[in-house]
Length: 359
Image (cartoon, rainbow, N blue to C red; front, side):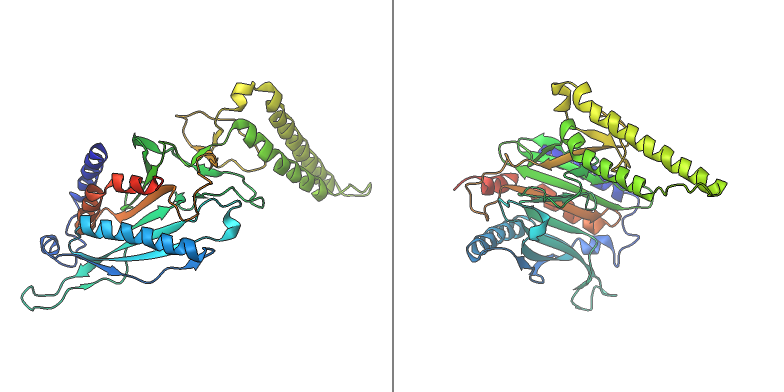
């Protein structure tokens, strides 16, 4: 983790250099002298988890809590933690493992008017900085992807997820995934760490062939809608109606050509090309096709699906098969940066990797 830590420590202090102290409720150096605390928060939900699996999942999150609270010493804030277990069954099918989460909320202390009044420091009741330790669940990019150890359900129109950037491998089984960088007045930063087994990701790229086959039915449905909306012209219709009829006919013919050219890719592309990753232009609607893009092009989206071959189906559902650690934090206020830096520095990747190993 050393290279990773150095990179992020540099970025964090770069963002804080010109802003520290302006938004503090007390002197930043005073906050740094107040020992932080860990406190249990509100109990999370439990959904679609067997009693046997729930017992083991609670044990796993207890281990994570003990590890984090013993290795990481917060300052100037209270850390509340909570757990949540299970899933909405309609989010997937053929579930292999249960998703569950250990969450940390960073509640900054509000300092008294005098350092000599022996008044207890009280934490703020809301937080703009959180860290989520997700087990068997991967999410990011504002809901753009919410991937589980399950297949995509049949009733989901898009049979894949869209991501802007591909996670960067920083060491064996550890991937860094930048979601949001502060820009302009925006001071919030979001990134994920994905910790996996066998140095693989739990998802794979959608192939060009899969993309074509997934989209053809939707394109044809849209064509039928256009045809149904076109009203036959009455011989006595006025000129304006005739013009509208011609416009609708032209749109129908254009859609037919889009479908024809799109379907032709199944034979025009070689078998090797059809198995290449499908990268598309951002903003492309589901009934059109603007051509496949390449890595390095601007304004692109990578398309991914769960890699069901990644998961060990012989394991009980409570067993961790990958971790996705989400960091959401404020870059403007020094006390948050201090604690996030400390948490990253103290994060024991080998501990999490050990939880992925078979007993």
